[in-house]
Image 1 (cartoon, rainbow, N blue to C red):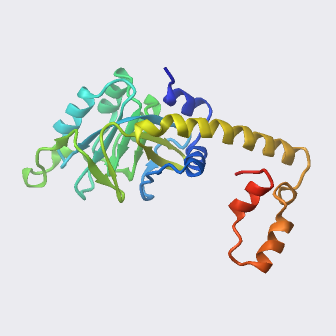
Image 2: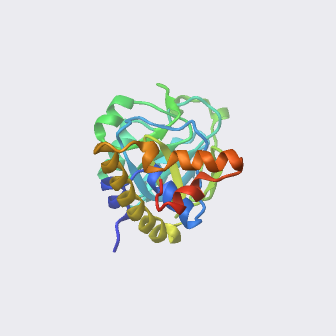
Image 3: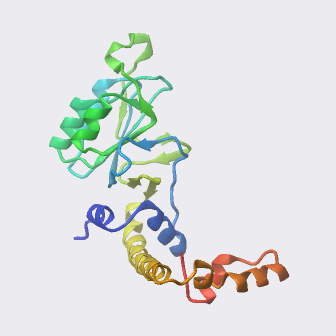
Length: 234
C-alpha cells in the first residue's frame, strides 16, 4: 500500500503537488493565508479529523483521543485569542503517532511543541488556555463534522499536506493521480536544475526570447502553452 505521507515527507512539497494537480485538472483546496508552521522545516501529511472547538478543551481532547495514527487534527474555533493546544496535547499526539495539527486560532507552549517534533500550523501563540475562560465564552464543541476555516470547507477523510509554503487539501481518491504527476514533475525539475547548475541560463532553458516575440504579436499568448510546445514544464 502506498504511503502518501512518507512520499510527501521524503520527496515532495506542497508546491510540487499543486503543480501536479493543476496539470491533471484536479481541484486543489487551498486555505487562505494566515496559518503558519511553528517550525518552518516541519512537513505534515495525513487524513483529516475535525473539531469545531467553541473554546472547549474537552472536545479537542476527545478528538485527539479518537484520532488514528497518521491523522491530522484540524481545529476551528470562535474568534477568541486563546491557546487551544499546548505541550500536553502535543505530547499525547506524539504518543498516538498523529501527523500534526492545523489550528485556525492560537496555541501555547510553542517551544515545547517544536521540541516534541509534532507539526503544528496555526495563527500564532497566546499564553492563556481555554479552561481559564468564563462559561459564557464556551460551549460544547462539535467533533467529526465538516468545518470551514480560511475560506474553505474541510471534511473528515480529506487529505491535508503542509510545509513552509502553506497548506493543500485533496479528496482521498485523487491522491494516486496527484502523486503520479508529482513524480514526473520532480524528475523534470531535477533535470532543469541540473541544466541551470551546469551553466545554461534560465531564459535559454525556456526559450524566453521566443515567447516574448510571440507575446509582442499576441498579448494573450500563454506561457504554459509555450513551455509545453517546447517540451518543458514547471
